[in-house]
Length: 114
Length: 114
Image (cartoon, rainbow over all chains, first blue to last red; front, side, top):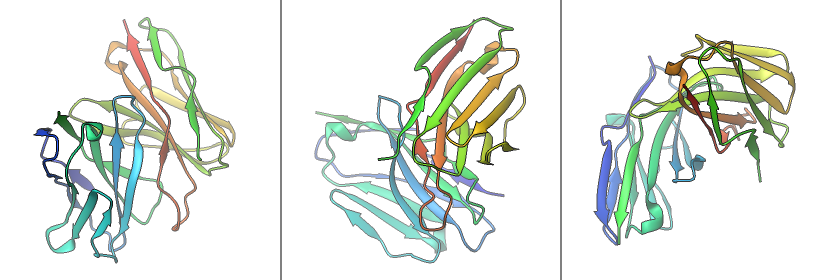
């Protein structure tokens, strides 16, 4: 069975703090893909990153970084020096080799206070 | 940029009404999806389509049907709306290749059934 768990329902931080959003997944597929999406208050989900199961290299994009660890089935997302504009709901998602089915976590709402 | 548009941002309907939610994408994507988003449950797949006139049930298809007569348009139909279908509905599309199949989302339709 495919499943994504985001245990943190809501996180509040003060601007400039670092924050890590956790994502744990379950799958029996050997080939799979992991995603992070951001949903700002406007409602439209914005794609942030895709990672395939054969590439465990961590990725950094500006203030964003992602830590993929197959050993713990985790794909965590860290925002460094958070800003108010980072306030949003963040979703982690999993897709198997069948491209058509995405499994989303329940989301983590991040509040960044000035 | 990929653009996915949905016919309404907000919709209020009465119990028993037939409701049509329209989604259009402008990037010639093969795959289109309908999700509903509810607090604490993340995104749940209702139906998806991988080609014109082709459709497959997602995880929660009961009470819904879909139509895809043209490649760019995917409609979600609530045959007889009920209050438990009050939710945010999100449409997405994807190219569906291994190089590029992240899903691109529309702004969502917040449906209230009274």
